Image (cartoon, rainbow, N blue to C red; front, side):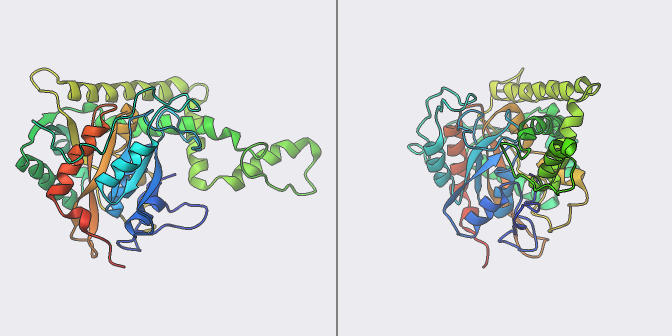
Length: 376
């Protein structure tokens, strides 16, 4: 878990563009492997941005499908109402190929949607006619100071690229965007507390060896405590404790239920933008940065959890709303020593992955960012 892949049980993963920096997370290993050329494609699990953010940091393409588009059978559940499996690839077309293969109804997963998966590759090079793209007003308002200067520059250039391709750029209002992080880190940790309770060393998870001097009447408690302590890392334990606290008596209504209400507002904001609201026309997709900055240094944010969590500022809302989202390269940071990739995030209405991929493909064809690779 986390936005940096620094807390793996095996070792820290490094960014192939600059091995002193993180690859993003939590599917940073998948993104780093694809970026480094170890594999043409990989899968990741995206609960709040864990496919898209590492894709942005590593200069590759990452897709979080609509909730229910891809079966979660076989995934260790973190937050069941948010988790989705998605592909990480070098190009948008490769992402379409992989997503087409893994989409569809699976009766082993109760959240799998009974929606026929469309062909995602047949028309991927066809431009979307009369394309309308929304840009949240909040990006130039209350969230303007959250973004690294290179992110602001690259995002503005990406918007102009779409404009040059004939797209209409429309301002959209997402007032609940600023509540996304708070809602996400209550809902996700609460669900993690419930889902991961089974990993107690009895049927699931690592079973700890008990010392011979443990009294028999304390053996079961010691087995649970030691097994969970040894089998789950510090970040996972921290999130479980946060979720347990939010679900506890006296705090459930104040925290968890309030977060669910905020989630509903996030979903309504996206629904209004995609359907049109008042004088503003409906948009085919919404543009925003994938992350507020480029990949940061290893160890830079491990002692400041709040700063680390804010790396998910722009990604968690897609999971809260259940909509599909994609990250692809939009440029590079220039004031960071080695050139570091920056990600453009595109969000679309539910089950509209085909058009989402076509929009991303238009941008990819109009730029050369997908051709750039890390220097070995």
